[in-house]
Image 1 (tube, rainbow, N blue to C red):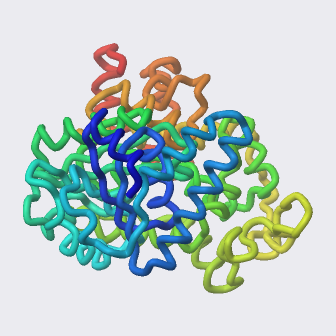
Image 2 (spheres, rainbow, N blue to C red):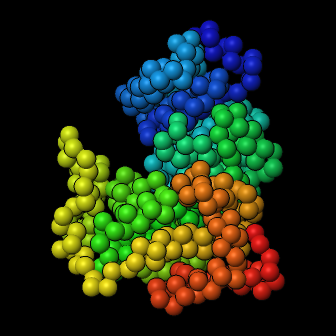
Image 3 (cartoon, helix red, strand yellow):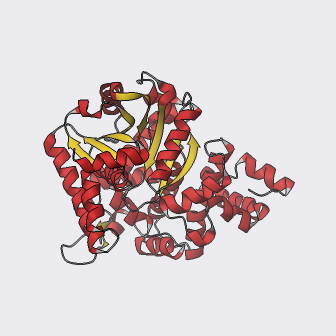
Length: 411
């Protein structure tokens, strides 16, 4: 590595290793190196690491062009990154972050390979969005030094980082993780280990509700318009296309596994059938697969796939826009309340901040739990019950909501 990185060593004394240089890995390497941290970014081949480094250079070029960074800072950021397929160069890392694909066996394998390179006070983190940290830590030599540090995509733009405590994670490990997240100028929220954690679990309600509305025969155009009108960055079907329908299915599968492990189950649903039809019957997997709910013409704006109406016939009773908007809000807010009730998230502020910065819950609503406060807990509970009677169990008021509204409390 060049002499410049030795300067950063003296200012903050941090060296981190990143396993995986793909979508998440290169983003984490970029934000860390930009903050003056020494980074060793690895992957299974030098070719893959080089491709990750090329993506970092693209971000740096854009930042330079937009005037966000100077030429000098760009050079320095690149000097802080050692992109290599040689694991041994991670020796002495204060933190190693695993950012490989969402596959438990693969993660277990890289954890076992890399953990030995941590310095004696170092900690190990997984950037998973679904797999229980406690289960991943079973493969770890020191489960008390194992934690979840969940970044959002694209890492260089998203401010939020969800920190997940496993059953055995100790407070020193938690403090180091929080300190690292602050050092790279991100906003940490702290959650306890549970299937889908907080953000994946609640955000998934938005996309699931969009598909449920489609399955019920509401027009895709109106569903998307209602999502935007509610204040979300894009409609639920557009979000799924961006994530990829296959990945949504994979995440759902992982969450089912984790729930089984915890002795819980995922309720049966109409959106599962929408996912099945899109993937298996019409083989449309989303934007990266050439098209999903939308078509993506080469030099033109995307538009909704015209055949959707054939597979999801329109009902004569189209729901009103307000009813759809309520379903988007309530499905997420109720799930947030469940997370709070189950102690997955223990701070009202973190729940609100996480929802706004993590997946774009409308900031003018102040976040998920603030939404319930402003609506009035008694009114919110009554409306939840109304929605549950019409659309199913997922809208049922949680016990905590019933108790709090009786006592006149707020979040």
